[in-house]
Image 1 (cartoon, chains in turn red, blue):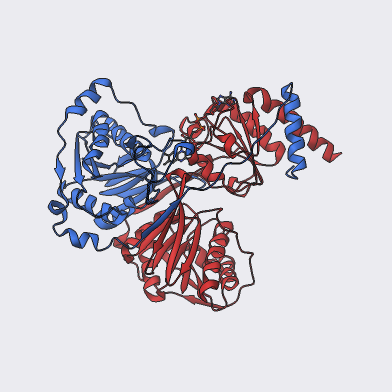
Image 2 (cartoon, helix red, strand yellow; image 1 turned 180 degrees about the horizontal axis):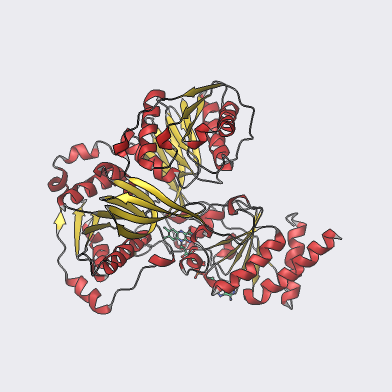
Length: 335
Length: 270
Ligand SMILES: Cc1cc2nc3c(=O)[nH]c(=O)nc-3n(C[C@H](O)[C@H](O)[C@H](O)COP(=O)(O)OP(=O)(O)OC[C@H]3O[C@@H](n4cnc5c(N)ncnc54)[C@H](O)[C@@H]3O)c2cc1C
């Protein structure tokens, strides 16, 4: 079985890519397969980036190869050009499984590629295994209330891996063959243009996906002021601030803070959910958290069903007390 | 300008896990455990279309057409669209066909968009609220050969195309897309769905809804199903999630806070 992981433009080749390789390696070892990595666009032009890519491939299987697709027209991201270039790569490599790491950009490229190749595709995979030549994939459905086990009887199949669902592999040492792939791109294919890119501010210096501790607020915060309090708590804890969809939709915090099915998937050691009811679509985004603390004024809120520790209280009263307590702890540690 | 909004009907996503059950074959949710509703991101898509029409009012007439593929009962989501003042709604009847997958739905929608020609913009929700496939909008763009921008929350008309605000992992982007275009819509504070007026809901309940059949749209239906079966559903399982929550109690909030910190230290988290 031949697998290929496609690395799309990203600020860094990081945990999401290493998780996808983790998933691929498990599949490849079971089937004596080979795992390849393809890098496309600016990541293929940066030696640092493609060495990381190559090292990932060599960690995953002995006969791994790294394909690089660089082209002047790929320096600026336009999905239609990326899809066209990847179509050419896959026609040459003919993999059985095309894997995409758990990043938003993958959800934009993968379906279009699958359509062109005429192959089955699954997004949000949390399980991946091979069975008599078929690929068996598990994904959450109904907002996480159920898991679907689906079978792609005949490869190829395109799979988008859900972030924080697979154990990441460690980075290895770059070795194995690197191959440049020539692609021809028709400028007339281009139908979109990226005009502006805005990075939204976050409450603390820690990125949500990488944070060891996350303090998250929901509709129960009642307004943006409540999030100031959560920001203070997060800073004392050395963590980041997240939110439910309801809080983002209310405009209290930026949409990029949203956690859940259609927001960020996170796996911190500690997740503190404040004024969040615990709808399945939110909880599915924190299933990798080691410890969940819920603070809610309603003892019947579903969040307590998934929490390890619970406080039934109005957040306005208990969060300031918690900040004081954490300050005291940090002060004592420093002394 | 004609804007098509693709909507679909799903099981109410708000039903709590405790009430969620599977059918006997374990291939879908049991029938009757909740209401059938319009998929949440399709509501955001309708809102984006309505706002676009409002902003264009002095410049150009915008016609909004709601489309769905499904059984006759899914006409309800079209009535919802009409109650929000979509101009027209058309049901593409899936009756008699095998189970729908994203490819089939996209091909039917593409054929319907062709029949509605000229269409300038097609909006879809970013993913359905039941299967979370996240594919139909992209497939549709491929089938039509149009520009596609995903995770869009606001749209303006601009020279030769559209300016779309697109959500990214770090924030957002402004993307220009050539007309005609497909956009998949995500939620943000600017596209929270409005509520229909009572009078419009009453009018929508009586509105005639044209039905287009599969054979009318694609001729040979067998060819259409040829691509399905690329994936087989084996089974659904319900994950066990219930944990035993340890309640942190105390006379005062200070006491509760102190006990929480201690519990976290004992678990070696702080
Ligand atoms: C397809 C789909 C995708 C979705 N994706 C996501 C997603 O990615 N992320 C997400 O979060 N949601 C998502 N949702 C929405 C989700 O279903 C819920 O609607 C949402 O998570 C509710 O947010 P909430 O818990 O903040 O609000 P609510 O459910 O309104 O809960 C507010 C809570 O605050 C408590 N509260 C109120 N006042 C106080 C106070 N003073 N102190 C303490 N507690 C208080 C209340 O008791 C209540 O439990 C999605 C839904 C669908 C259908």
